[in-house]
Length: 371
Ligand SMILES: [Zn+2]
Image (tube, rainbow, N blue to C red; front, side, top):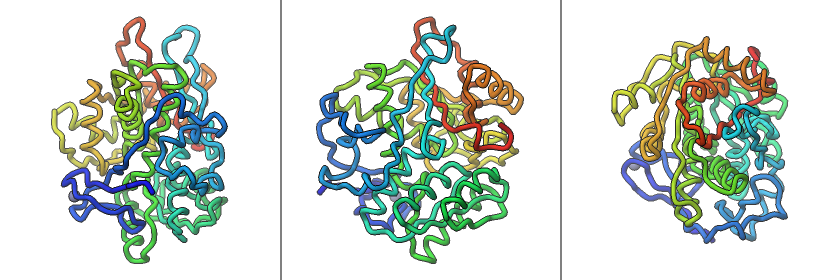
């Protein structure tokens, strides 16, 4: 057996990895600690599809095959030059996923772990993409699923979640109210919280973004630009590159530049005021719905990761996001507004001539009304 432990990100208390545990008694989120086996290029499983080619770096026993019933081939997405004019900038086309967003990386691992534990029902809250992903994988795993959503969720995402047979529980209120309602239900109904924010197994999936880039370009890029709300991708990617460094596979970490929507930017605000604690902001409304998080639970970890890589945070206003959406479509990429916000950060970045930059295309434009 793998010796997995949950470790509180604040007080460092250790817990056994049991389905009921999703946060520390101090209220903070948990990280996953486990003895990682040796990993190098020779350990890539070329016989497996998608991100499971890195199965040897994922928290499953080599003889466990539960994930094989659940995977839909997620991951191992194309990494292509942005355009002829930008030969050193690459986009990772992570909307080429079973449910059309990068969240499938995390959902595949988290639901496989839930299935391994014999979980019968999962509960999650989402601004849309994580909900569609959890709903799809839960259905495939024959696990019942309730998804808590805010009343303003994109109708296309609601339809997608419904199609996967999940029970939708609408909440009138902020994104934080939606999360609280889900957490209350988890407690009262004694179910499994399949949270892409709190459950560290989700980050074990999103970390494969880093492994793939490392394999695809045979080195670590200079700079990553990543949209950030709850940090689902950013923290997974940071973890992934830290693991590669710990394995001696890279001497450096890429600089992480994060972007928030100007209308909901608690992390950018804290970063620019050199604070490690965020102040909850009021979400003034943004089309970049995937990063509209007024009080991210892992804010300290996100800010630390950005600082440790000598990165920074930038904001994008609504007009800039709309223009970036059009600019990306003109290059052939039809993305969600959240990804367009990320492109704004790229446009603002003062890159050097040879700087190797990677941007994720996180979600398909087909998932939102505006696109
Ligand atoms: Zn704690």
